[in-house]
Length: 238
Image (cartoon, rainbow, N blue to C red; front, side, top):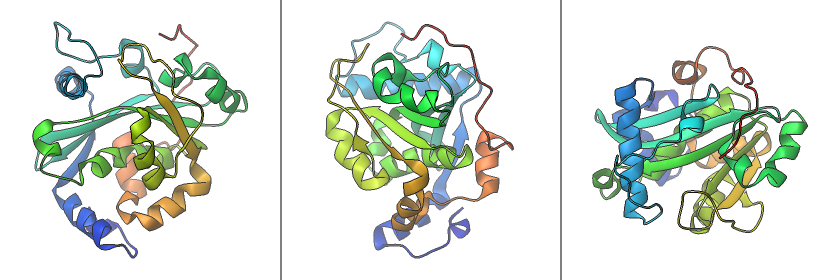
């Protein structure tokens, strides 16, 4: 993979580009793959005291994990599951995006204007990998950047704890869109942050060349058609 990423880079980026030789991104499609992700999410959220304990020890969002506009991305290091990020894509007011349950005033104007919005949520990592590889947050979020490029997103957003805003601003040029708000199912307030993806993607890729990819790599992950998935009718947003 590293040989596919061209351009100058800092020492940090060069290290991550070399690290990509050991990395494989996949989409969780089978029940076994998804359950492994749900368990990893649960362990990460419990570890950070973000959710209450559950008997099944899984963190699973029935609506947003299985909708046609959802991709559960996974990152493997040396063949072992290390991290995950979920990507949801919407292009009209009926889109099923997790952010619409809490931040509709911030996101709905883009959807009503026909803009393509990509949202990344449920980022998690295996504890044993997180403690060894400082590159893991960047590598785990790389598929979200690839998805935004593949689906030609107008706007990219994330909903996360406020303390993560500095990271997302530094890496993706995200800015806070409003004050943190209560969020269903988690024990802390969540902030909605985002950026104009089209305007900023080149700057991000120039600073962090490991986010670059080929059309072939993106098609292998997300399909041959670089267009948003078929629009689904609006459902109740939990």
